[in-house]
Length: 464
Ligand SMILES: [Zn+2]
Image (cartoon, rainbow, N blue to C red; front, side, top):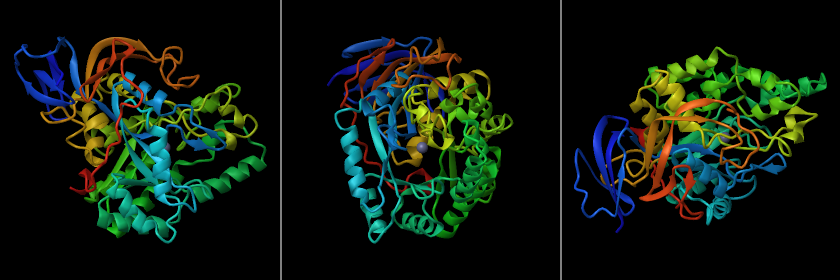
């Protein structure tokens, strides 16, 4: 069994920061100790002055996803490779049940998309669009296959949206089978009316995407999602929370002791709706849902991360090229494919704007990008921490490395960056996935297809 000894680094987990050596044997961490003998190690890496972090876990990605007549531009090969460059070694992507089909069909489809392409490990959530006759039983069989979480939409009527009865039934089933329901919380019915009004008034530019999706449509849906979960006796996880108003709903629920959880994404922490008003059609680069908000929201979201009202930072990576995909909505903002790229930059942005700027401790940073995602989604302690017996998913992080984010140098298959020109300090120098070095000094050493499907356990951290 190949072994790697990482010497002289600073091991950072959600709980502690400690100078230690790490011994990797095969695909697992064998030992972590103040000092370990060099003999017998096939390779010795000196990590003096560097941080050793658990591999990042991005629980919200959309690779190779059909949307509005096109497909997200990163597939499992290019997307997972870009993730690895940024220090992410595990993703959870979304399989989508097409209406009138079984969840099993969607799972098979997404396994095929990932097979032979993923270079890091991946799990799958199931997007439920139709419970039909067998849907509730199908949820149980998904859990048996390691799909321990489901996503339901309160937005996109006629496409993905389900009604409250469906949401309540699904939540009630998870109270028995231990899966976690993830909610896209926006009041889709109301938004649709506002959108139709805007179009009737000839408002077609990208900025209207933000103007037609009010903050209250999000906070109302978050409130309703939590209320439905409370009635069903199940936890709930709000995806891509974007506003102070929605955050207040989560805080109130948690203050009452309810198992309500939420994630946000770098774009909501660092950008505002002014981006959508850029000249010409450039605002389309920032069209995704929920939309970017006014400038007073991001500071509240940072507070939420610090105070554990938000538990996870994911990306909602869903790239569409500006030239030939976003342009589908040149004359009508509702036809702009919804989504933006981010899978590669999550750790860089959160480290720089969180840790370097004093908003987050190093341990909280690790908790947000790796440990809590692993716990909530049934992968802990195999993933999400550095401990003997855990998978050797290790990021050797250089806290002093300067990097300028740009579409010219990123590895995502998309022709723009939402964070073009952002200067960050702190970047991955070496990335290991199950004991194999997949990125080193800016070179990709992994292989398409080496990533494995993760069977995730039900009754994860949301149930404690
Ligand atoms: Zn999404």
